[in-house]
Image 1 (cartoon, rainbow, N blue to C red):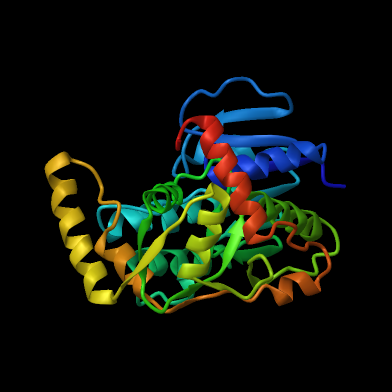
Image 2 (image 1 turned 135 degrees about the horizontal axis):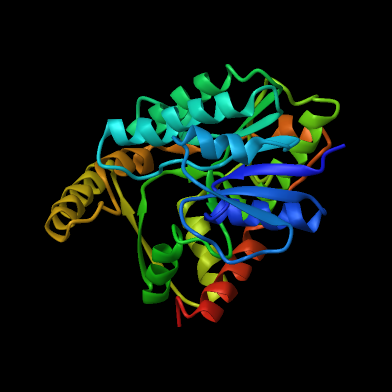
Length: 307
């Protein structure tokens, strides 16, 4: 019987929803953290990092399954991506021993030639496949929802009323709480019948994907705003990346629109097929795009992130 989950990335957006879902189901949680966290009932915080073998050993000791969410989505170079995603997964693999592991990858791993990030996530999948225990890999598309920071800029652009969008692109979407429910369901399955073991699952809200304009319109409806979209061809995205990279260097920060991310955004097909996961009958999406965007808009407003 599954009683205790070990979670990496529990202080992040997806990890936070996963931790909340685990507690809602009555599981005890051990969660890795780089810095002290406030006490939380049913949660044991383990201070350390993905490359600290001792802290990972403490994290997994006594756990019944591991959900590995932590990783790097934005970095200066290939080495930094591989250190966070590939080397980190190798350390988790060693610490997990023969425990069931749910490994959170990315849909970007499907097209590793497009971005350093995607290539590092595919390498991490190869490393994860060496797990001694049962393993399931999940490739989420764009993840949004209450507490997310990635979609905040798009919400603000929609409020302004003029939204630049990648031309001709379609994307899958998944709300954070729905993704969290899937990760917990897979951990339960791996600890039991293990019907998901050895598989790579794409995941989305069951829609089959949306155009970028449809996503922006869903945000506009949630905000009660009017908007006009401006198609951005691939070369324009690369010009934007060059500008943002130059500004980021002057300010001593990472670019929000890096060349790596621009190449990713310019790809026309980031739709996901969640039918194989849904066919297991252990999880089904509960949140439509309209509902999820409405909940996200409400959360942003209550948090004071948007007006």
